[in-house]
Length: 85
Image 1 (cartoon, rainbow, N blue to C red):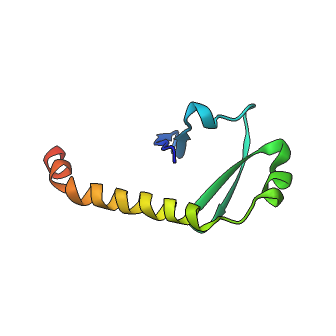
Image 2: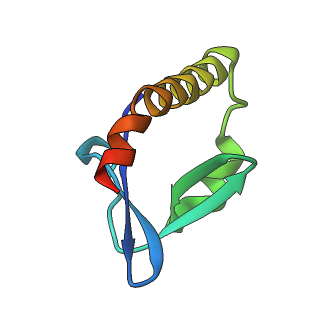
């Protein structure tokens, strides 16, 4: 799974997509389902959404693994954050 950077731009949260995940054009469609945010080309948003396959167990496992890694990293680096404050 690739990672993307979050940043703030003019009061909105934005995502810097990896090069391999870039979209053509200047607008995309966004759909949030629970904790998952999906991005689609705006000209084919409904078509792409309807063609989505249900998330498989390995995708769910990958998401849970990434969350666990984030939690472990945060727990192991709390001292670093406190020193920065």
